[in-house]
Amino acid sequence: MSGQDDFATALEAIMARKREELGEPPTPEELLAYRDGRLAPAARDLLEARIAVHPDAARALADLAAFPDVEPEPGAPDLSAEEIDFGWEAFRRKLEKLPKPAPAPTRRPTPGSSTWRLAAAAVLLLTVGLVTGYLAGRASRSTPGSEVKPHLNVTIAELAPVGDEEESLRAPTASVELPPESEELLLILSLPETRPFASYTAEIHDREGRRLWSGEGLRLTPLGTFQLSFPRDAFAAGTYRIDVFGVERAGRPTKVARYELALTPDVE
Amino acid sequence: MAWKFWKDRRGPAAPPSPAPAEDEEILKAVRALQAGAGPDAFAPIYRRFSPPLRRFFSRQTVLREEAEDLAQKTLFQAYEKIHQYRFEARFQTWLRQIGENVWRNAVRETQAAKRSAQIEPLDPADVEGRDVPVHLADQGPTPEQAALAEERMKVLQKAIEALPAGMRRCTELRLYQDLKYREISDATGIGLNSVRSQLFEARQRLKPVLDEYFQGADF
Image (cartoon, rainbow over all chains, first blue to last red):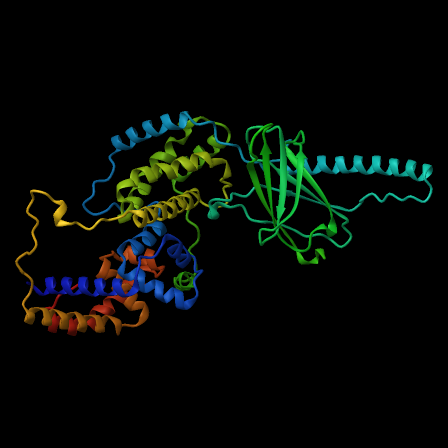
């Protein structure tokens, strides 16, 4: 045996011993947390030791950092241009069987965009306010002493759905600040493209998952949104999750969208 | 914070380089798909990213056999979610995130399957008509050889562990995993030149041990 062979053997033995001592290979979650600097110093040091003796771990980190310039494995043949073409043809056939990807809400100022939706909501509110005011006037004339107070200062927040399965693709939680003079919070929920349902229900949960509110019989507006309106003191400051379900005439509700909302502390 | 710390040590960030031509082609494809183009518009994305995704998955031992499927799954999800791409990060970063999710789930599923698999111990009584070897001739090292190997291993391990933390980390990745300098840099976030100088210094420090116990072996 040469010195180089002895060296390789000693390294193998050290690795085997350390692997036994340090336990399982790091999970992808641990590696991603390490890469993103989310580990405490002690956990980071321990993980570094594990990475050092589990070849796939360091390799994964290196490959992800280099992506898409991932080097082929030594000795393993890479795909030829013909093989990629062949693969693409097979892949394309699969794509053709799919429905077209659901379009995301666009940010351009076209009808249906947030600007237009907000404007439409404002007009709607103004109309509601005027009608309410008119009715209140009539009511006060017919029943002296009764008082109807329209909500004049309304905070409007448009929420986009967040993904709930793939954390790194999640849209950020919408942060909403209610100014002190605001009397009402109007949430406009834009719906991802989905098959139509007979009706919809919504639930609001707090951070611990407790259901705080649920409502049935929601209807889509012509702009493809839902509108939920609450008095400003309905919810304390905090983070909330809103789930919208589609309901068939006979059948179980199907979750169609999830939203996250953070009400800032000055709401109280 | 290790990752960020090392990144900071790389010095001020270089000015962003102009996007390579192929990135333009990719962005054009994304815009077309978001505007409602059919699957054919996805071709440049598939051609560009299918090989590196396949390489990534195939280099993970536990996923090697399903590398092709996982690469396709990643691209499939990218196609389905293409409207969620907002041009705020590079497309390849967005796609890599999808790949990371596919990777996480695949490893989780593989480990769960492994845990649930029951391995029955082989009972010689069950193997009818076959000779089950119950003893193999011992061809291992002699006690003296084993003792020498053990001593060599301990001396080497001690020498490696005596290296300063950053240097040790580069050295371990080089020695235990045979990573290239670039790969060590990518895995640790340490700059390429720093990796080079750390390994150069490590060689100097380990040389006496390598000369005495391993006939001047190198790495």
